[in-house]
Image (cartoon, rainbow, N blue to C red):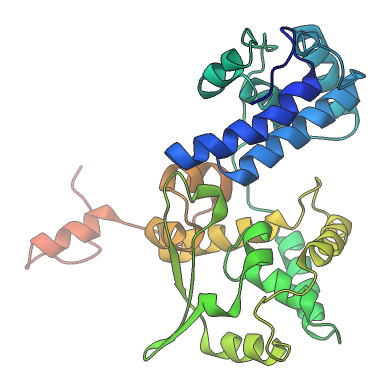
Length: 315
């Protein structure tokens, strides 16, 4: 690695960070490339929003500057959680695994002083019935369009709970045909290095015929121009009433929430690739119970062969 000044600039750090991350990934498997690219992109956004040039020394990213960025991000319409990701990205540049590499270049960086941010994340709440009805009508309309890519993109999120990044990378080889039917098999990119859980989900037969009918010739990628398609779908879903820049993500949440309610937490884990704790916080609304009323006293009759179901419990 080349020799760099004692006081590195923000640009120096962002140039070296991907290089040392590649080396670290060879040794430990982390951090993943997507995470590294996201960190660099977020830090650039922080600098632009806070009015700090890349050639400024890295020490210029003070608590006051980060507070200024956070305020600007909120005023632009970002949620506190999204704005917080920029602040976390700055801290990622001085993570413990980076320090030896920086010292090898003669840099002695102190951890960034972050502003205090209360990590209050709103639990998932199921959209109102009226909005879900709009989603159903909107999705039915996609199937009637001549260009089937928007329908395909929405289907991968609404029916299979895929993240849009995984959907863009999906190939037809990820649909595995077996004697008992067709299965969608893939490893979510976001959790590949943490849980490494592989999603294996059975594909509805009628839906599979629709999906296969959309395939263009010998194309291996399921979505054509997937990123562009998702940008358009985001705009359409925001027009329906969803907020935020990732409106398409609501389709994934709707899928997981309905699987959770109808088939239970284990099936929600299976389709999402996430753990139960993550599901009940971000993707499902346990307060919306869809089962019939339950009487535990009646269930106790299973242990009493002579008991009469529906009997009134004694006072």
